Image (tube, rainbow, N blue to C red; front, side):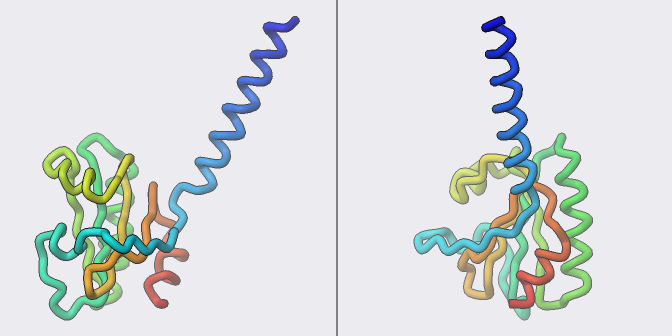
Length: 135
C-alpha cells in the first residue's frame, strides 16, 4: 500500500512539473541582460536597416526547430525591420554557451543596438511574438 501511495505521489508531481513546463513553452519573456553579448555580432551580420534581430538557436535533429524557422522566417518576411538568423548549436556551441541556452529551439530577440530584449524557449506563439515586436 505504501508503494502505491509513493507511486501516485511521484506521478502527480511529474504531471505537475510537466504541465508547468508545457505552459511556459513558446511564451515570450522580456529580458534585460546588462552584460550580454551583442546579438548582431553573434549572428555575424550587420543591423543595416533592421530594427530587430530574431536569433534562433537550433539543433540538427530538432523537429520543433524546423517549425520555429518557418514561423520566424514568415514574421521577418512580413516586417522588413525584422531579420531572422538561425544558428546550429552543433556548429556553434560557443554561441549557445555565451547566451546560456540550454535547449533548442530558443529564440532570442535583440534590438538595433544588439541588446537582448526577449527570449523564447520552444516554438514561439506567433501572436505573442508579433505583439512583442510592435513594442
